[in-house]
Image (cartoon, rainbow, N blue to C red; front, side, top):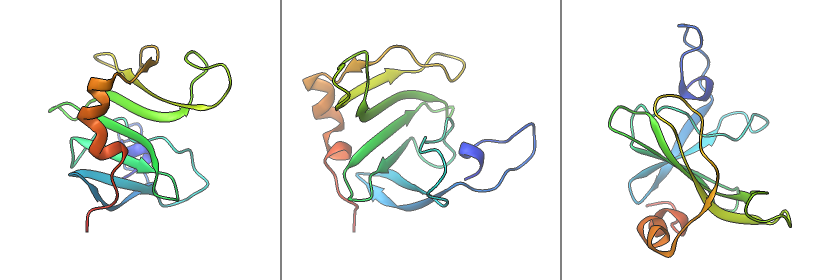
Length: 127
């Protein structure tokens, strides 16, 4: 997958991501160059969900895409100042606007939505 999984000015760019497995059907992506920005693709090409894990296998980010391959929801576990001023990571989500890649403000993940996405948040790579 190239340039955050998109085309740059109509030109194919170098692949940034590789699929390293799945968790509950979501493709787990890992950066080819560990020094690059850790931000999942804005568009999906081969899956409705992409998942990123930390090096220890714990949850980092899940992006959910619509049937047109556009980013709709991002669930993440990292510091979010609007939700917790301490700087500690907090499980939260953003809804992405239509069209475009701008997301709305962060919201804490409800118990209902946690249960809905639990297999991805707590999951380990499928064998």
